[in-house]
Image 1 (cartoon, rainbow, N blue to C red):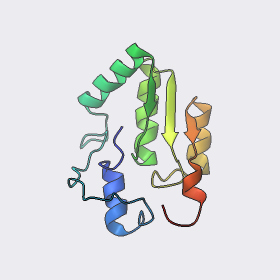
Image 2: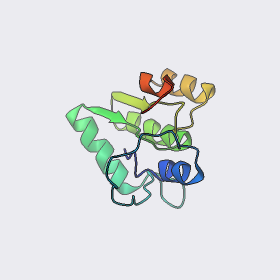
Image 3: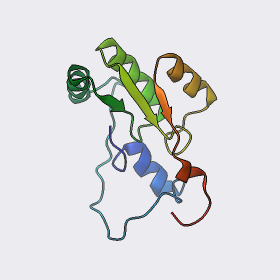
Image 4: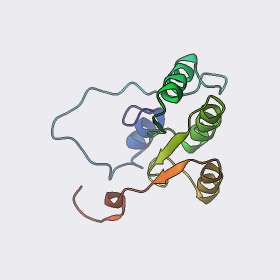
Length: 124
């Protein structure tokens, strides 16, 4: 799923909550804020297609920088569609998972990735 272009990431960057996120040496294109959900809070058809391709290839579905609320919906549907390998990228940084989210997603078989660089002070 999207990382720097995730609507959640874009919002956090604009509000200053993701100010410690590493910067690129050169300016990147302005992101188009992406979400996995439609206006009704349901997964979009495009995301369902991606989920089906991931299930067919038996590869990992990573949640990117989608917000925790989106991740529950995404991974529930992915499991229903046969995805067996799922991962939350740094759940406590930008993604917004709390302990309850982590426990619920872990119980559903979703792995948590904790990048050590997110916990080291200093120049990123």
